[in-house]
Length: 225
Ligand SMILES: C[S@@+](CC[C@H](N)C(=O)[O-])C[C@H]1O[C@@H](n2cnc3c(N)ncnc32)[C@H](O)[C@@H]1O
Image: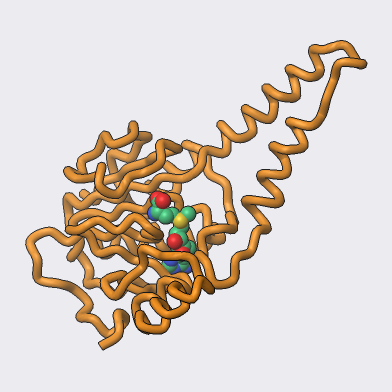
């Protein structure tokens, strides 16, 4: 049975989804990813092991238990069946229309009282740093100014974040949107979530959030009431 053929919901007390899990795959969560490497390691693990042994591919955390889904499509879970959904550094990898659809899908599958928590890079922080670097250099005399750090910062955005391609690696290397607190909260509220707000690292209504949350970026959480 392939991961996609697994039963749509599982009869466990608490059903928690870790969407776009990458290497973060704790016990107690359904760890979901859709990259080519995740597919290979989950569905053809002997081939993946061989290619890793031959050093054609680097070692991976993806394994047979990784649930393979393309998260741009409808989630294969029943309405009102999921207790909590976490997504670390995932939403920015979708076109905004796909992100909207997925936020609505999360609302649909969550139970009443269920929680969605999304962590994304903070666009405001990124461009604030750019402006600080710019102001710092412009405050210097003309002969002392140096644009290297500014160019590196812009390069990180265009070369490393927006256009990098790793064919058999992760789907997680190209950003297709940039969020700030206002946009992300709006996205949650448009999908129907209540009590939506920015949250601190590891502060959550999801009890064991520390097992999935690795990044302290812009974190927003909302409740299905
Ligand atoms: C930057 S990684 C984040 C890994 C981990 N959640 C963390 O917080 O460090 C983004 C992950 O999302 C996955 N991903 C991106 N687009 C996806 C899609 N359409 N369907 C399923 N997974 C996707 C990538 O394969 C990648 O593993």
